[in-house]
Structures are given as structure tokens and as C-alpha cells.
Image 1 (cartoon, rainbow, N blue to C red):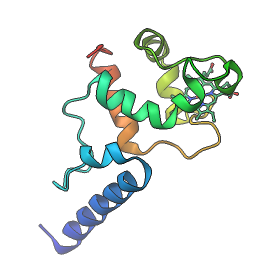
Image 2 (cartoon, helix red, strand yellow):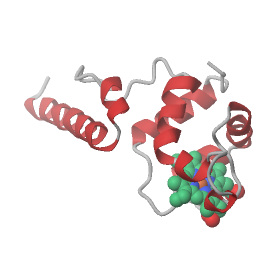
Image 3 (cartoon, rainbow, N blue to C red):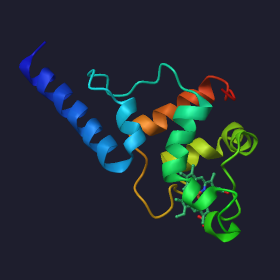
Image 4 (cartoon, helix red, strand yellow):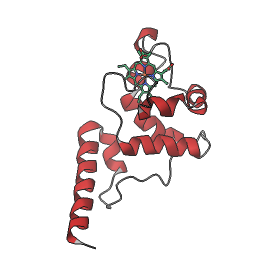
Length: 129
Ligand code: HEC
């Protein structure tokens, strides 16, 4: 491997680890320093998907929060989320596809890895696993 490639990989890994450590403790354990920048090999609704959503979306989109904070869109149940995922709306809002609301609202776009996790879950058939 070329020196520059190795340096780039190292920088990517460090950025991922730093991001995970700074934003959400649980994510840090999901990112062991293996050099794998984004592991989408085992994406489960109950762990990876709700992990991303609970940090970034549930503050406005959970059943317990006031209806107004998330425009009445509840994402904290499998059935609800699956409906948003099947229609394509979920992926479009997190990918900031032009013409769609950009989520999370008034915050930075999710990391590429978090988006990849959601996309993988959808592609794998939106299992309730
Ligand atoms: C700070 C509060 C807030 C956060 C955090 C947030 N949203 Fe929203 N979301 C809203 C509001 C308010 C609306 C209603 C539309 C609007 O005002 O833009 C909305 C609308 C939506 C919609 C419906 C869009 C439509 O066209 O009907 C989806 C889907 C959605 N959000 C998904 C998400 C996802 C996924 C996340 C996390 C990655 C997220 N939101 C994070 C506040 C939030």
C-alpha cells in the first residue's frame, strides 16, 4: 500500500472514531479501530437503525414528544418507520435530495456511514430484526 493511501485510511479511521466518540457513546463501541470505516455487514433495526435515529431523530420524532416538534411524523416504531422507508421519504430526507425536507432539521446532515446503515437496512428488506 502506498504511503499516502495508508495515511488517508488512517485519517478516515481517526475522523470516524473522533466523530463517534464526540457524538454518541454507544456508537464508539460499534466502531472498533479495525480500519473498517463503515461496517454495514450486520444491520439490524433494533440496534444500528434505532441507534442512528434515537440520537438524531427521536428528539423531534418520538411518540412522547409534542406533535409539533416533528410535524406529527412519528418515527419511533417499526411500523411507522417502515412506512416512511417504503415510500422513499426516509432516505430522501436524510440524503438531502432536492425538493425534500432536509433532516435532521436545523442540524448537520448525518454522516455517510449513518446514511449507509439506513440505506442498507432498506435494501435488505426493512426487517424487524
Ligand atoms: C429539531 C427537530 C427535528 C429533528 C432532529 C428531525 N426532524 Fe424530521 N421533521 C421535523 C419537522 C418540524 C418536520 C415537519 C416538516 C418541516 O417543518 O420541515 C419534520 C418532517 C420529517 C419528515 C416528513 C417529511 C415530509 O415530507 O413529510 C420525515 C420523514 C422526517 N422529518 C425524518 C427525520 C429523520 C429521519 C430525522 C433524523 C435523521 C429527523 N427527521 C430529525 C423536525 C425534526
